[in-house]
Image (tube, rainbow, N blue to C red; front, top):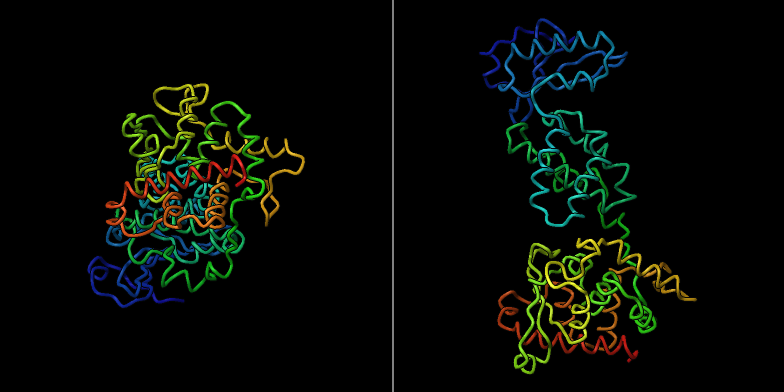
Length: 409
C-alpha cells in the first residue's frame, strides 16, 4: 500500500520531488509530480471491475478541497456502475479534447480558404481522433493515448495518419496556449513519436494521380473539344494551363487582366491571370499567361462577372464535375485513357503530370515548366525582375503544348 499523508496547501505549494503523493482520506486521490515539476491530480478507482486512473486537473488551478470533492463524487458515480468516460466528463473544469477541437475548428474554418481543406480538418478528427480521445481532458492526454489513434493507420494510411497527428498536435498546442495543459506536446513527432513509429519513408507508398499518357493526349483532347458546358470548358482551361482543379474552378473575372490591342502585339499573348496567394497550395501569388486559345475558352463561358466557369446556378463548380467529365470521356473510348503504370483511368490532377512529361520529352525550358506548375524555382527576387520575360517564355511554351494537343507534334 502506498504511504498516505495529510496533504495541505502548504505542502502542495512546496518544491516536491517527482512521484505520487496520496491523500490520507483515501478515495484513490493523489498528486502526481512530474520530472518537470508539473503537478496534477489523479484518482485511481475501481470501475466495473477494473482499476482506472482519472485525471482531475492540474494543481494549483484545481485546489485541494475541490480535488477532494471531485474524488468523492467520482467514487460515488463509480459505485453506481458508470463507465470511466462518464466519470471523466464531470471530474474537472478542464475541457475535453472534443470541446477544444471544436473551438479550434471554428478558428481554422475562418483561416482556411479551401473548402476541401476545411472539410478534411473536421472529418479526420471526427473519424480517427474523437472516438478515442474526444472525452479525455486535454491535460491528461499522453503519448500512449496519441499512439492508440496512430498505430492502427500509420502503416496503412501514412499520409493521412501524419495529417491526423499534426491536427492532434495543433489541438494540444491550443490547449497549452490556453493554459489548460503543461509540458511537452505528446503528439509532437521530432524527439517524441519518432521513437515509437516507423519513419514515413519506410512505410509510405506515395501514389501519384493517374495521368493521361502522352500518346493518348491528342485523341483525348479531340474528345474533350466536342463537349460543351462550363465543366468541360474548365477542364479545357485546366489542361492548357496545367493548373490545379481548385484554381480553375475558383477563377474570377477580377483575377483576369486582358491587354489592349497594342499591348497584345507587344506581348504576343492576350493577358494574364493572377491567382491570389489565398487560393494557391503554396500560399504564393501565381501569374499565368493567357494565350488566344485560352481566351476563346473563357469568353465562351457565358458569364461576365463573378466566377468565370460558374455552374448553372451561378455557384462554383465542384471537383466532381471535372472528374465526371473525364470518366465519361474514358468510357466513350474503346481503349480508354489509362495511366501507364497503374492502368487506372486518368483524372484531372494527373493532367499536370502529362504536361510535365511533355515538357521533359520535348526539352522545354525546365524553369518555365516548373514555374507554370507553380513549383518553387529560383529566388523570389530573380522571379520579380524576370516576370515579363518568364511570362513570355511560358506563353510560348503553352502555345507549343496546345499545338501538341491539336496535332500530336
